[in-house]
Length: 401
Ligand code: ADP
Image (tube, rainbow, N blue to C red; front, side, top):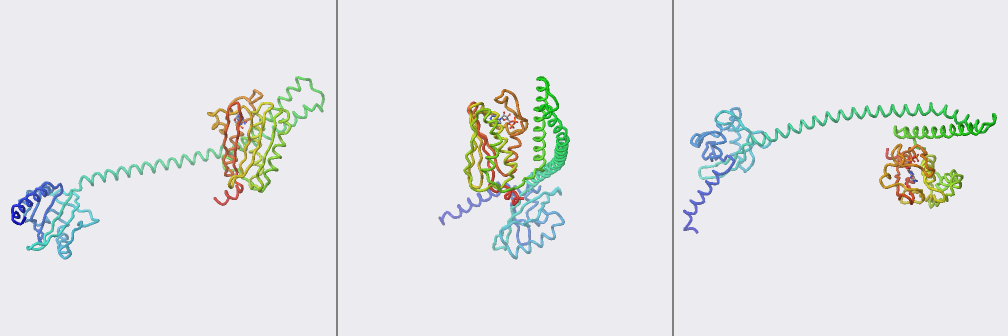
């Protein structure tokens, strides 16, 4: 190998030179005094000088005037602690072209010790394109953030307006409902009195009229009560009143309220309560949930059917289900029945009864307690509504606030 060394060296030198010339970055070498000893092609085109113009010149000619003096000082320090590293790390460095224009650069330095003293090789990368791309990206980001901030601001304003409108609506509904109920009670009361014929007998037609007045005014009262409930829930003004109670007793009370109706329709109405421990929830609201579900079950179950209530404990929840053998609910309507004013169709009596608000209220009351309500149903076979109530619903809600 030694015998081939001179030829081998020449070839290696040639390869090295080719590599140097092909490099996309400017590469230069300076001596201890900062005079340029070597430049590649990229350096020529980057700075706009020919090789001859550069060789032997101080490296400072490639640096903007105001940095020349400090640069000479830095060179002195580098000589004292030479190492391979980035130059001016964290600083924005600029190069100066022959035509006086400047451009951003990134420079890495590496020392080599020779017989003639320390030489420093600098690899200089033109950062113009990268800076331009970064600037563009930054501007885009800034514009995007500006847009986002202004649309957020607009959304917040909109939200406030909507909240305000919603609150006004709820307040209006609450006060209207109250104002409507008073005269309605008068209508209900007096139509009842008339129907009892204490003030004198009515003929058949008159009886029918009075009964219509009575029935429809009760329907109107239910509607108003439901709207009032819903507006309270929606405006966040519904307050749950926690109470520890016996689930079995509440279920039995609720069933008792439907005894007459179930007997009249020959519907078997039964409950199976497997909950031994007391439940802590709003007793009246719990009863309202159950009564809503029972009322629907009886309404939509034909004569001779069954309605069953089942209660059990699963983890920290009471799970209550109301199952009927009624007309059932088609798959596509099973979500919508919980919407406000949604009614699938006629009841078993062939007419529309109710307000279409019952399940919307029921769902919200369950959720206010921290529970969930689900529905399984098959048209023609029946429906099963299941809801869960945390055994200590109110305590949990209180502590999470
Ligand atoms: P409504 O006052 O009409 O009963 P709900 O909100 O309680 O209002 O119920 C909405 C609709 O869901 C009902 O009109 C009915 O079509 C359907 N539905 C509710 N419960 C049952 C059930 N147990 N069986 C069949 N359909 C039911």
